[in-house]
Length: 359
Image (cartoon, rainbow, N blue to C red):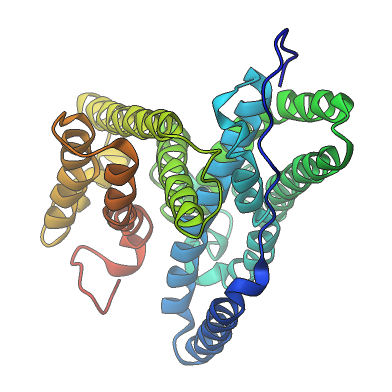
């Protein structure tokens, strides 16, 4: 926050009363323990299926947390005013990147079920040998440590400085967070892009797209903004942020959701058009297989549910206020995100025919 000539009234500080939600926390913790136990059982019964399911869940939540981290560093780098009152929620969600770094360990343990290129010996396939300098286990592991280490360290650093500033309001913390943000912006772009290449695109090592990282970023930024709306709305309903978050804040968050809805569609269409126009077999196989049999239905649901419906909902002037429209629309937003994720990640496991059991 930059200095202002006029004095702006500061609202009274609010502190989250965790004791009010003890029952909910216990219930969610119990569900998490049971879910982890079922995952362990699944690893013993069918590790191949679990590997894809775990990667699907990891990628889903990782992109949400990475998106919140993105909005945090953008806030500091641009000295934004509107996001001051919602910054702490973004920081809290981004801090979960530490937990997700731990959840990446099962992917490493189950890597042979996911990445077929790890099991192909050198000299067996010429197209893979040309990529060995990048697609090899040691470099893959090193990149994963670098990417996850950066996200976890930067997110925790920003949150720690923010909490320290709450104690005395020292402006040096603002300068420190701004420095971290400027360093993190290019690192975020590189780590998210190459993380998408490594963990998702290399599921099919024959296929490649230079736009894939931007496509993942567009979805992460839009979905994380939707998550922020949900969190803010839940806090307001619980009695917090009543005099802090205003209708104008919901307007801005809704506009960002609309912007990244359009940006996602633009990148997705651009990727499809360039691959179609170039007509290179290694590239076109990705869309040919996803436009056949039951995958065609999912592809159409993705186009309609991920762009056309949300675009109309956001633009319809007769809708209710932005915050109600955004919060009610959010559940559908996560649902359409679920359509996109298996479209990319589960095809290598399901083959050309999609079914509930295979996905």
